[in-house]
Length: 202
Image (cartoon, rainbow, N blue to C red; front, side):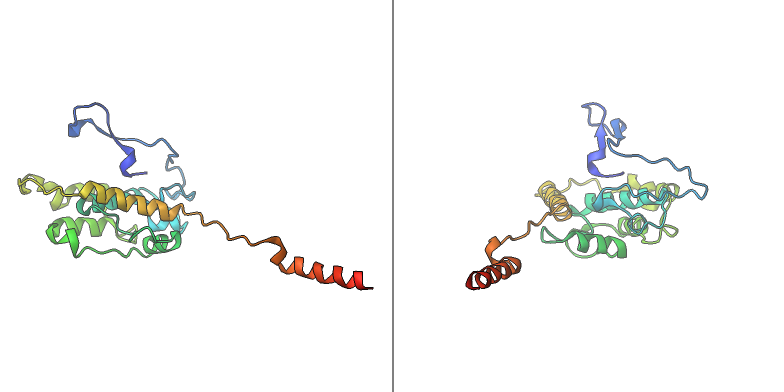
């Protein structure tokens, strides 16, 4: 389950070599004859469409999650949540359709190669999605030494990332309480009241 909270440093050096991927929840091992898993185990904002549709899934779903993570790192917001008013159904419907934007906002300063990698990692068809080996051979990865060396303008990017993530989890975990009215206003109570009056009159 690839997501920001599952990426940790093993020490305080801050070096890339000390980064590790972990998971304190459920993990699945591929054992089925067809190489596919059927039981959904996921974090909503990073789940691949095939997992949601219960079509069976394999390691391609991890490439999707990594694509969502890369999208978030490049822009400061998640691909399938628009704001705190989003409902779980709306967010999951966007994930299921695989529709997202690579234009406007922060995308204007993102290279064409980075956009190409994200779009191929977030392909809705797992068979058309890049494999891990193909991701490592992608020009955006292999030409990383040619990236500009200027200092990035941080602005309020961390706050925007936190806001986008909070909006997603808020929408997915929203529990709207029903509005209760006084018992006396219910149809059943009113019927019983009429019967009581009638029997008293008799």
